[in-house]
Image (spheres, helix red, strand yellow):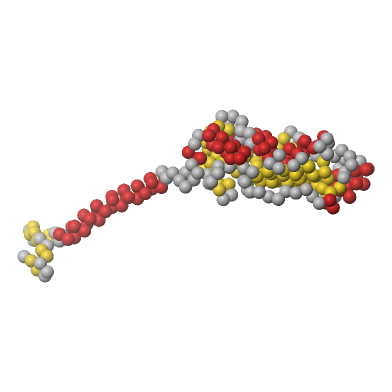
Length: 269
């Protein structure tokens, strides 16, 4: 029997005195549709999760992260050597104590500050001309009466360091881009590729030397040119950050009114 708009009525089965009414066909269809939709939704969700988990961490990068650790180091060194300038800052630890360094460097010279023991002094090199600027405490720390008397005149003034002074080569080393990077960015031991990380606003890939990075670690930029951005030296010998690659900066000798002739051998730092 059909009623209403022509849809079939529920089938009625008589079992004894009880009547059992089966569900209409359209109800059964909806139930089956919901049951079928559940595994489909689960499969879709699982597929999305697997896709997210398996996404390429190097997508949108310079591709260096896909290389082997030795290849990454080679790319980073080549990038550093090819850059005209860099801003290097951090802490260095050696047998003689620790240094804090904050220098801007390029092939023609460098400028910045170095903190050694309790003294902080500024360095400026233009070509072969090297200048040192420090407070009165730096000049009087030797205990010499003459040094103490001259300290007031030398306070916060540039002193040109003679090329024949024993301190010249030591101080110049802090202003030499090539020498400083070669000596400070040494990794010791077999290289392996570490995790992806970040240094400031830059995505990086880390390479590690030795077991668990005991021989040093180097973070290399995954954006643009693969410059080294952070270096942790072996044995806890300091951490350096490298920024402003290839960004030029002004470099000029100090004016005559800013310089004073020390007139003798410079004190050791």
